[in-house]
Image 1 (tube, rainbow, N blue to C red):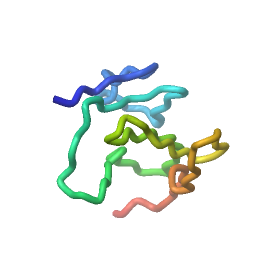
Image 2: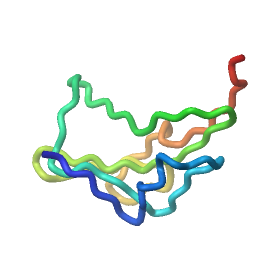
Image 3: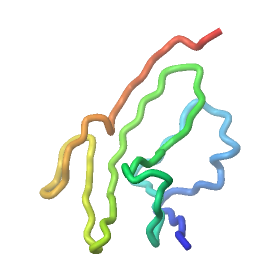
Length: 98
């Protein structure tokens, strides 16, 4: 059974946030033990959000591979062995629908 773990991140407040910002610096959460999705493309939902204003995010992602190794994707400033993926950093502004 997969296990969700956190690092420098306390998820207990996620269902109670009424403010304008959810922020963590050097925090992480992960699923250990492997998971399989409904599709074979390997798509993962990182967030499902509702907002009435602009949204910005920056992600670094580490993916564990079946052989025990991993691949790291970063939004900027890669270290050796990391891959820059520009879609991991976005700022989106839109007008709410009425």
